[in-house]
Image 1: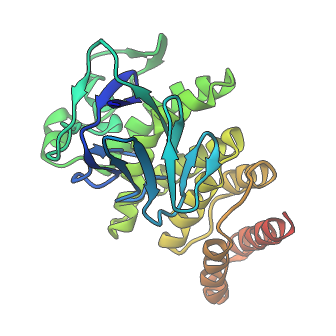
Image 2 (image 1 turned 45 degrees about the vertical axis):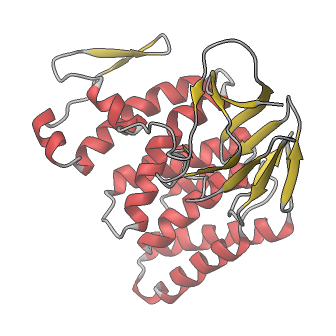
Length: 295
């Protein structure tokens, strides 16, 4: 029986064979989400049905809210969660579809962050997103952005998205905030993993919203994001971020203890160089480790 994968209000027709999902552009469904591994999962499509296989991803694959161990047979109506993205297997029916072949699907050429930036011309005083009007921050010219997306421009873009995400979180719409921020957060962590210098203000914006998402959704992977971000920079997270992490650690189901311990050890090695303020932050981060162990 033919099946389709319903994602973001689009039905993707599944042909027989393997259908890869991940962050890598070679995947048939490429997800710009920091919680998604480069090759996260495979949908195995046969004439008899569809199964999903977790490719040893860091954050796993959930089917109907439960994490699978290896491979799981799917049925029409099953919900698959990969990272923060949810999709559903449906039976083929009449209606518009996007046909998927081994060549993959067309990929977005702009991240959500970059799209938001281009949607805010410098001469505009505000921009509307999901019916919410927010002010346009001052920013460099688009010609500078076209040549190379500057970190300053990214900071301004994060403020734009963050203003809307704050409103969504305030209304209890954590899923909407998560979808809105996922691409921008992916941009930041990928730059960090690539060894690029991240401005302190951009790192704090990304970390604070990741911690808020962890608190709102209960997903420990968002808390892990914060730890990875500051561990890569080799410095303590600022006090507001740590405050939100304490809230998150009381809400999430689990965190990556090995990642957190590695971060604590990296900071401990630098302790002789720290001033009083950073020593105090380090003590609070040690407290996070104790809190995680007690959960």
